[in-house]
Length: 448
Ligand SMILES: O=P(O)(O)OC[C@H]1O[C@](O)(CO)[C@@H](O)[C@@H]1O
Image (tube, rainbow, N blue to C red; front, side, top):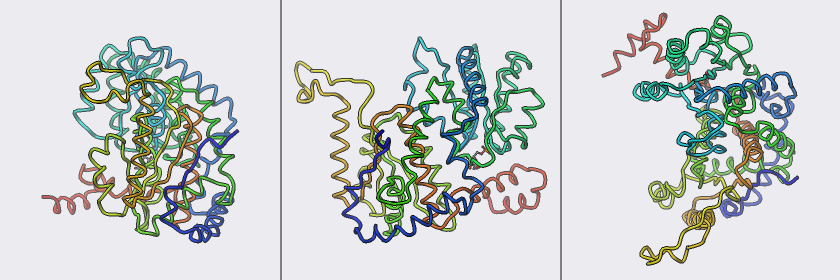
């Protein structure tokens, strides 16, 4: 089988020398050793490396059965979670299901709505208007079981569902994905009798797509989790080599590191397919939380092309030269749509009549690639052949493996996120959480 994810550095090579590349091999070897021997920082969280080959068939069957039950009975599945507890499944579901699923008349899978990702009042209130008369099921996901945003969202949903269909039926419709033993959500699930799925102890949120965190909502969406995991397993095998020359995931990590050393502090993930917008959000959390610490790290940003060529394109072409680009390239489209002929050719586009839209998009991609490299923005191209579960599974593993190695190259712990606590502490104090009285008074003095 060919490598499911390709890396093309041709358009980046003019920006670094071959000797710089060669010099990185010892550091890459050391980072590889830390990762594969489990001796680096955060090594309690390496469970993600083997998730695609997890052979717990009993748990898998239970998950598939739960997904089939929800598919058969629900109009809507509410997935409640934030960060690593929702971004992975959202990325896969957006990429692989019909973009207008909510508007289709005939469908054999429920609409999936994500909630608990923010504290937006209007959005949350409006959701309940849309749920009236719908048969709603819920998957509440939180590894810690104590994250404020999903916990608040779950309060709203639990109380609405119990009012709508009674406490017992509500308990049958709620599935909780959380820690095996501890946390408020685990305690609540036990008390209320919800079916539960486990977030493994050794898997952090942003590396959890191949665990029940991602797999339950993905399976409910009708996506083959066997294919997704098979892609991940193939990538696990394909990107296991220590040598830079034989490992595209490590080449990508090394390339990013070289760019960082050259003052290219911002990495733009560019996509040419709107179905990948949520994939970019998943990627940003993966790299942002893994690398951005100790005063270090590339800033991961994303752009949607060609849309953003009409807004951010100006800056990318001619603004401050501290950027490089990683283009996510999809080889073929799954659906074919051709440009129609127009009898009067009023818009002058008849030279495109009969062309596949995918091919027009491809020319936009090629033109942009050349323009941006001419504008001194190094471009790496990460490619998959098509948007399917197998390729996406491989792509996810590719980025996870490269991310872990990138963290070790940079000298940070790629598996913790201590910085996210600061806003939480302030928020708790300002909300008047018991025990935060002193901080509250200090913070309030600083606010206008
Ligand atoms: O699954 P949990 O524990 O609710 O955490 C959700 C997210 O919150 C964070 O801890 C950051 O606040 C992320 O790392 C994590 O993905």
